[in-house]
Length: 498
Figure 1 (spheres, rainbow, N blue to C red):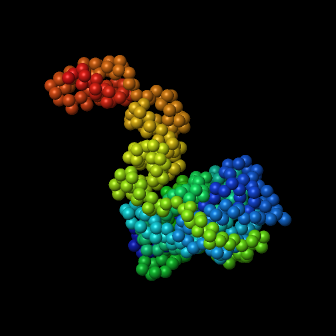
Figure 2: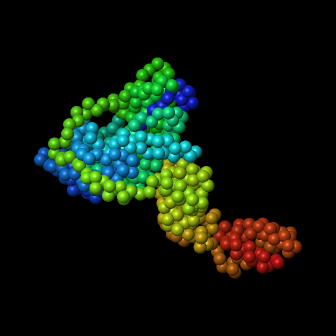
C-alpha cells in the first residue's frame, strides 16, 4: 500500500526532525557470547548450537572475555566512560527465534556510556553525535519464511528457524537524539553509520559487513513543530542494512510523518520495516517501552568489573582517530579538499586506503573507485562495498596498467569481466585477449597502413607539425582494437616520418 508523503521541502518548512540511531555490531569472537559454540558465519542451519545457546534447562552461561574486551575498546574509541561495575539483565519478550524467551542484554548498567563521535559531512561540516551508551548483548536466531513471494511472514506457507546466530556477541551503540540538523538529517545518518563502520573495522573487532548482518542500523525518527524545541513521537525502522538505505529511510520517514501530522493525525510509536525495492517502510509492531520488557538482573551471570589498569591498557591499543587519519592520508595522498570530501562522501575512503596499501598510486585508486566502480554501483543501486570486486582486484588491474599489459581503455573491459564473475583480472585479460600488442612487427604494419590512409596528416608531420601524430595514433589504435601501446606507436610514427 502506498502511503501519502509530503514533499521533503514542505516537511522541513513545518517540522524539525530528531534523529536517533541504534547500531548493532556483531563481534568477530571465535565463540558465542555465553557458550563455546563457534561464532562463524554461514554454517549449515542449527549445527553451531548447544544447550546454553538453545536455552535448555540447567545450562549455565559464562561471559566471553574477548567480547568484554571488544566492548571496552569500542567504548573508549567512542570517547565513552567505562563502567567500573556493570551487569547483565534479562529482556523478556517472545519471538520464535528467541530460544530462551528472553534476551541476555544490559539495561540500566551498560559497560560504556556518555560518549560522542564527531561526524564529518560532505561539505566539511562537523556534527557532534552524542553516544548515550554502548552495551553488550547476544543476537537472536534467524527465521526463514518459506512459500511466499517476498520472504516475509505474510503470505508464507511455513517458517523455519536457524539458531546458529543465537548467542552471537553483539554491541549495541545508542545515540542520544540528534536535533538541529534540519534537512541534513538523512545525510548525517548515513555519514554517522559510515564513520562508525570505519572505526569498528579499524578496531578489528568486527568485519562490520552490512550485507552479512555484522552491522545493522535501527533508525529512530520523530518530528516536532518547527521552533518548538520539543521531541515528537518516534518510530524505529529496524535492521537497515546499507548506508544508502539509512539515508533513504530517514528521508522517507520525515515525509511520512509530516504528511500524517499535517493532515491532523498522530504518529504511532512503532517499529517499521524498510523495503529496499520500493524505498518504503511498513508497520511492524507497536513499540514497547522499557517497562514492557520486564527487565531484571540475570541471576546466572556475575557482574563485570573491569579494572582501571586493564582499561588503560586497552586504551593504548586504540587505532588512530578517523578524523585525524583522514587529514594525515589526505596530505600523504596529495588530495585536494574536494577530492577527499568526494572520496569520503562516496563511501570509498576505506577502499581507496586498502588499494593504496597494496601499492597503487592514490590518484589511480581514487579514479577507479570514484569513476568506473561508483558508476556501476549507482546503476545497480548498491554500495561500493557490495560490488563483487575488492581492493585486491583493483590494485591488480592498475598493476596491469602500470606494466603496460593493458591500457586504461582495456582496463575498463577487465573491470567488466571481473564484475561479471569471469575470474581474476589476469584470467579476464587472458580469456578476452585484452593484452596490449607490443610486437614491433605488428605495430609497424599498422603504422604503415595509417600513414598510407592519411597522406595529408603524414605530410604535416614531415613538415614538423608533430602534434598531428595524434590522428595517426588514433587510426592505429582503431585498427588494433585499442590493444596497442600508444607511446610505442607514437615513437614508430615519428621514426618513419621525421
